Structures are given as C-alpha cells and as structure tokens.
Length: 327
Image (cartoon, rainbow, N blue to C red; front, top):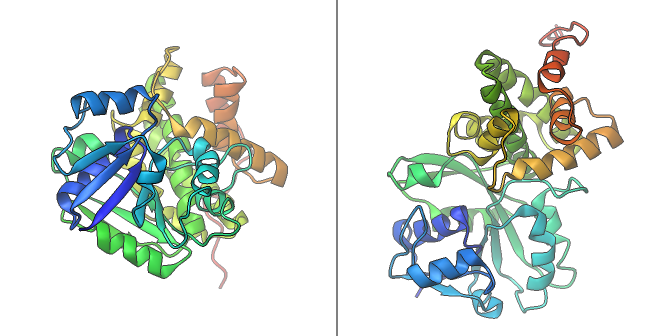
C-alpha cells in the first residue's frame, strides 16, 4: 500500500493531498495539522474546506510521529515557520525519508532558500529534499484546468522520485536544473505580485508590462549573487508564474498589494511580505541593485507615499535596457 503524508492543512497543502489521493498512483494520504488549529479542526469535523471535500482515501492526524512514518512527506506551511518545524522533525527517526517543500519564500531575516534552511537542521540524519515551484491555483485545478510546475533538488534521485510519484494529466512536472535559481525565483515572484497588486489598486495597469520586463532583471541579480543561474528567472518558478501571481484574483500576494494601495487590510497570508523583508536586508548588506524591491519596501514598511515612490523609479538616471553584446 502506497501512502504519503502532507504536513499543513491550509489551502495549498490540503489541495496537494487531495491531488495526490485522486490523480496519482497513491493509495492514501495522511494529512497532519496542529490539534489547536482551527483549519485542522474544521477539516476533521466537516471533511471539507471552501475549495474541496476530502476524498475517502484521505486521513487526518495531529500526531507528528504518525505523519512521519511515511517515506514521502509534502510540507506546506508558512515558510517562516520551516526552521522550527525541521527542528521538530529532527527529533524523530527520519533517516532516508524524502521531503517535498511546497512553499515559496526566503527565510527572514537570513534570506536563505528554504531547502538550505530545512537541511541545516538535520546535522546527524540524512534526509532528502526536493522543492516545488511554478504556477497553479487551487480554484483552477478544481475546475480541471491543467498547468505545469517544476521540481528541483540537490539530489537527482530525490527529484526523479518526487516527479514520477506526482506526475499526472492535470499537472506536468519539469525537472529543474538550478535549485538556487528556482527557489529564489519562486520566492521573489510573490514580491513582484505585491507590486502588481499595488499597480492594480492605483489603476496604473499600463505599468504592469514594465514590471514584468524589469523585475526578472533584478531578481536575476539576486540569483547570481547566491550562486544560481540568473537565466532560471525565465523558467516556471518565476516568470512562468507571473500570470497566476500578477493577474489572478486568486493570488494572495496580488490581492494584498491591491488592497494595500486602496488603504484596506488583507487578512490572508501573503508570503511575499516576509520575503520582501529578507530581500531588503540582503540587498542592503551586499549592495545588490534591486530598485523595485527597495521601492516596494519603502511603501509597505516605511509608509512612503505610494504614487511618489513609484514615480521615483522613473526618475532614476537613464540607462540602456540591455547591455550590447560583445562582438
């Protein structure tokens, strides 16, 4: 009997469990949540959330030890809580197990990619880690709208295992070739989503094209600094996720930005907010030129005037769009 576990019963984690239970060659899925969590208890009591109903081969537990008995475990939680979760997991015998990190973000304030955060908390046990990135909203998947995503890892065997286990006609998974670039790109697309939402909130739709063109340039600088391939920014994890993040009303990050620009509060988790803090810290410390992120930080955290700050981006010194190729 093939069983996997999912740690995290939020929108994305619950969907991934449902997807594995209904689209993949998996017999059952064990969903883990905190016994004190309202989300977990709602699922336990009703077996549904606002997006889907749990299938009969999905089971719930608040026992971490039970959840960690399976060899393949998907993690979908607030990425800022990942380090604490990894420490908790390390207290159990998990040698040789494979974990798929299904969140997108950088740890704040370290700006570390999530794969490195997780692995650093297993000093004596060997675990395998893969990461998931790319477009896709639960609302669309539940309408059977297909999409594509990318799975990456430091270990080709772990990557291959995860892809072959989860491949289906609903989601086509590609083999990533740059875990650093894909992790940074996936994290920063949420930050770009905040900016897109602010433009929507201001009614400055015409600037979204410029945002889409220029944001990958500065995200590529951060990827290069961290040792990845800046060209990865044009893959599924970053640019390939722009439609779902910069335009969809289902995007939490875009909605946060739109409501922020209108002076309203968005109550759901927008991972890009904490990631923006991490980006600001590393850009300042390492002198990385990231003008869009710097302007966004001033607006969200320093109460800078939104319109004046965005206009300030256009008052920077004139420069070429691309450097000429050497002959």
